[in-house]
Image (cartoon, rainbow, N blue to C red; front, side):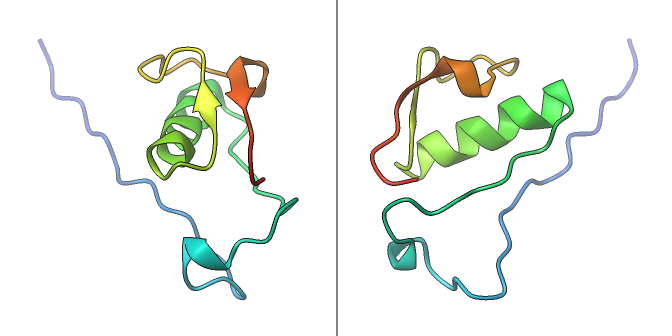
Length: 71
């Protein structure tokens, strides 16, 4: 067994300071590499911005979004 490092993941914006400021139809960019894309989608779900088929699937893609009420 070896050590695995999981680095924090966060969202950044020059304009938006709070998620409540997101307008309907806002665009959010997620990483294109599979491991970080899944983590980013799970983060968006935990913030209530989307719903995924399986909120625990680290390999989720944008095709796994089942509800997208705001973005």
